[in-house]
Amino acid sequence: MGVAYSRVLLKLSGEAFAGNYGYGIDPGFLEYISHQIKEVYDLGVQIAIVIGGGNIFRGFQGEEIGIDRATADYMGMLATVINALALQSALERHTQIPTRVLSAIEMRQVAEPYIRRRAVRHLEKGRVVIFAGGTGNPFFSTDTAGALRAAEINAEVLIKATKVGGIYDKDPKKHPDAVLIKEISYLEVINRGLQVMDHTALTLCKENQIPVIVLNISEKGNLKKAILGENIGSIVKG
Ligand code: UDP
Image 1 (cartoon, rainbow, N blue to C red):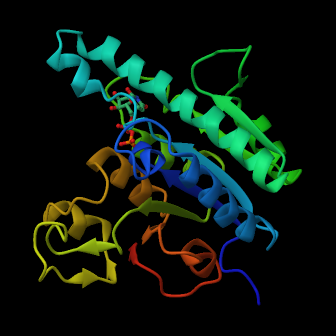
Image 2: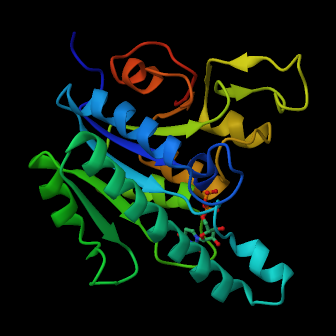
């Protein structure tokens, strides 16, 4: 079966890394996600991953304890590096897929610096590229880093992995009658105030015409199905 996308950007939130723990890194999740990624890798798809850090530290948490916002945001960016190294290690251990971590914040002993052309070269050589350090700038999110990197490497789609089935008209965790929206435009997401990604991330996707698929990553095989073009979760485009 042919794939619908040959180069994809996968955004994994820090929350996903926490798995069943609520904080930190769940080794069960690492093993699980490694196999989900391998299924897609085996289709010959080029995979780049942007990692969140919310399972360890978020900028606003720092503000709550008196750390200024910019410093707290840098702490959040460092958290994404921790997750990136954990994922790299898990991918190598469970799947033997060659991976490279590229960090937006230079940290030469643990990761390559982010260089766009190098990232693309790694992908062409069949390496999974893990982008760490967000955009490298405070006041942004890792969703925005996902949109930015997707645009930079010409990814055909941004897949946002979540714990819910897609985009709903209201929060499905609070409202059991929430309705899944299968397809929606970027502007409608913004105008209706739906919690998909922040506006900066959405605007970047819109301007570069990168479709965003929101899917439940905890359902086995969803990632592969989406890449094969199955109608999984929700899609933002147009
Ligand atoms: N962050 C930042 N600039 C970026 C990306 C992330 O300052 O380009 C900081 C920000 O403080 C954020 C934290 O890193 O709260 C962790 O990222 P995020 O909350 O986006 O992770 P996720 O929600 O995906 O786990």
